[in-house]
Length: 91
Image (cartoon, rainbow, N blue to C red; front, side, top):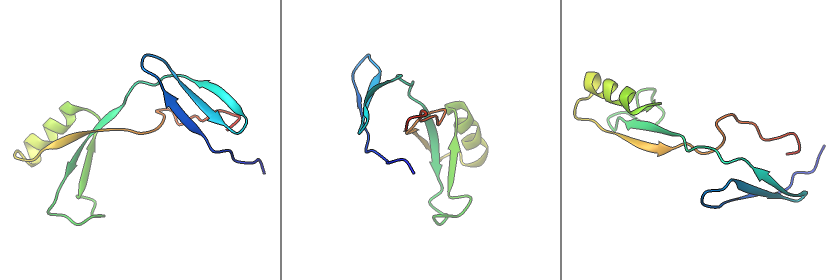
């Protein structure tokens, strides 16, 4: 089983990131920021399927709110991690 090395990621304005592992440093391509819009129904309990609604676009959130909760709000939330989920062969 390969050894796992701790990794830190450093972002610099206008550049990609570099990842430092126990095996050295490698360049990480800069990814565009991805966000979603989240609606929380406070009348539902945590874990209830109706407690959270997650929308990929602001328009989708607005359309759903117009039809289902005209006085409700959805907030924008940054998605953490890679859009593709690829970590590289050496990780």
